[in-house]
Amino acid sequence: MDAHTKPVGAVLASTTEIRRPSREEAEAAVRTLLAWAGDDPGREGLLETPGRVTRAYGEFFAGYDQDAGTVLSKTFKDVGGYDDIVLVRDIPFNSHCEHHMVPFVGKAHIAYLPHDGVVGLSKLARLVEVYARRLQTQENLTAQIVDAINEHLNPRGAAVMLEAEHMCMSMRGVRAHGASTITHRFTGVFAEDRVEQDRFLAMIGKR
Ligand SMILES: Nc1nc2c(ncn2[C@@H]2O[C@H](COP(=O)(O)OP(=O)(O)OP(=O)(O)O)[C@@H](O)[C@H]2O)c(=O)[nH]1
Ligand SMILES: [Zn+2]
Image 1 (spheres, rainbow, N blue to C red):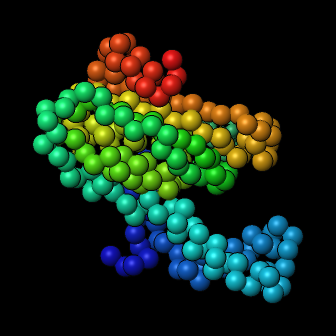
Image 2 (cartoon, rainbow, N blue to C red):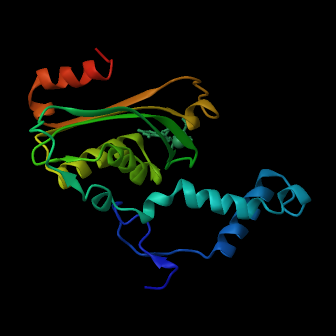
């Protein structure tokens, strides 16, 4: 496969292969946006900006080149028979909304009930990064995290809650500063058993 012909967003609905533009083409697009904003891309202060922006995009959207299966591939079974809730809360994340390409910023709370071993705790935060570093809706991000946990860890249940502020709602448009959006998804035991759901909510301080 040509270095610039990668499946972009292969996990999204479309699996169409889109040619990845070269860095030079991406930098030219940034110069176009600078001029569209009303500035002069040729002035000294902006000369290096297209290079910086494309490098920043490389970080913001690194998730397209990452894979949840790789992150969750290593599990541990020697945990003293522990089989209760494993919960990591307040995992900070930054993502970009797919409608406006501006950030939404918040925290993720992730829990699962182990079935056949546990995963390293840092891997849950890495899993959030795999999907947050793409263009997203908060609902899709929530669903993708839960689906990956179910697919790769096969737990008795999984619970994910995200809380985030969307800059497209605070910096522009309706300008609802401070409004936060909460999404959650419960599967397995967390979906079937209100007691387990309540334990999750209590552990993240929502009850
Ligand atoms: N459901 C959902 N909506 C989102 C998310 N991020 C941004 N949005 C919304 O996407 C919608 C896009 O609406 P449009 O009417 O197409 O675009 P717009 O004219 O820029 O909308 P306004 O933001 O209301 O000015 C807006 O209501 C945003 O608030 C998200 O993660 N989930
Ligand atoms: Zn938006």
